[in-house]
Length: 320
Ligand SMILES: C[S@@+](CC[C@H](N)C(=O)[O-])C[C@H]1O[C@@H](n2cnc3c(N)ncnc32)[C@H](O)[C@@H]1O
Ligand SMILES: [Zn+2]
Image 1 (cartoon, rainbow, N blue to C red):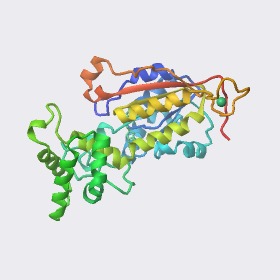
Image 2: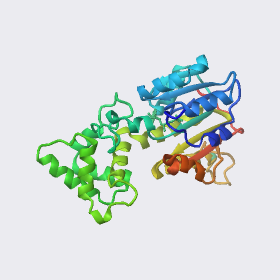
Image 3: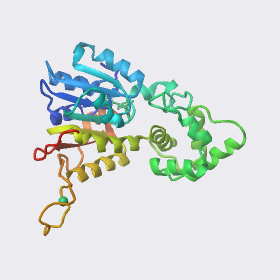
Image 4: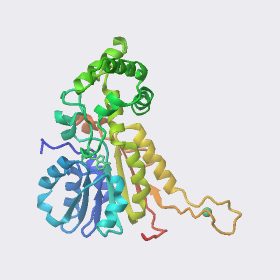
């Protein structure tokens, strides 16, 4: 259906997870339910799915789209970083597969009142979970200049961070808060010298991405999730993560690598004292990216990178 967020790398996710009847899957970024629907179809008639999203509106869309699957889907409104607690609440001890498809959905991006986009011109917001306290408005109007500059530089690799923050501060000292996405986009565009405006995208693109990452603590959530989820994967279960930003991809790559490293004790020791067990086998040496056809049909997919790993069979550990 055309009005839903277009699901990225759908077939690749299914090929990796290989959903089966009777199995239980975890989708931590349910969004409009595109991947979830494919997983449920592929695991018919008895595969089940725990669908998590912290955005109430996304959950409503997914609930309506996945209605036909009835009791096979459990919907949870939460941050996926709380996976340990939420699985415990559901009395789930192990999973047959887990998926994250990071970032924002087109529904979030395109709705002006969510305040993500300089194209739709709503109030500056960018919270995926509107129960969170600090929005982009608060960061832009209240953060100390060095912290704001760090965010733009670190999360957006924005070369002009200092000049942009100077322009924001000037506006603040005049006593007019920056309230809309359009307002901020104009300030950014005027702070970046015209000769350095990027050719294909708006000059505020990096800045908006950086603020979004900070507002939602996107990197922190991912790190916390990767620490927790592995303990819940059954031997042979797969974990699949699609990221859209080099910082996210680096976190996934490092975490998989660290879970895939076994005992670090020197070989002359008679037995292991470090206690490190190999938990994951990495399935993607380099990330899987969308085909040129997919990118042509869905431009948003162009920066997608998929990494997958499998829980090792050799070491079976139960949650205490
Ligand atoms: C790219 S969309 C997912 C699209 C979905 N896979 C599909 O095919 O329709 C990402 C979704 O993840 C959600 N999300 C992002 N970070 C989250 C977090 N830390 N916890 C829970 N949901 C999160 C967003 O609210 C958004 O709905
Ligand atoms: Zn050891």
